[in-house]
Image (cartoon, rainbow, N blue to C red; front, side, top):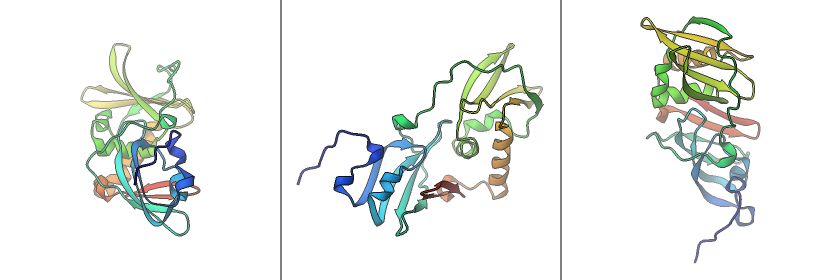
Length: 207
């Protein structure tokens, strides 16, 4: 028996060969494609790396259920695959005026983004944000930008503490701090304690 090679969009699966017992993805995705669930029989498994535009990802093992949903745990290990091309971030384009916005003392500094798990948590709060480092008025800043909404947050370290300046319809760093606060209140669980649940309405990650 020989493997079947299909030249096409892997996010659409291969309906002619369905249903499958196992679906194994060797690229990362932001959200689990509906086609993978539809083409996997109830009780079958989907193994996929779930990631995002802040660059943190993790391997998930989902079991497909009779009702067309899928759920399961993250497996840990800091697994990373290149994102599928349709799931890559949009070009940043012209940067917004980073002198605008309102400043406050940050509860959490941008250094939290250097930790894989913390960055994953932030990513669940601001899934459309991208991160870049730049110099602004002679100071090094870490910037999060949501291209679609135009929201941004810029953080800099100053006199031993962090300052955040943000603008746009969504206060990105407020959302990040809120999510990190909830995660820490639960004891800062590891990614192996996270679960993912996918329905036709969307995808939910919990810990």
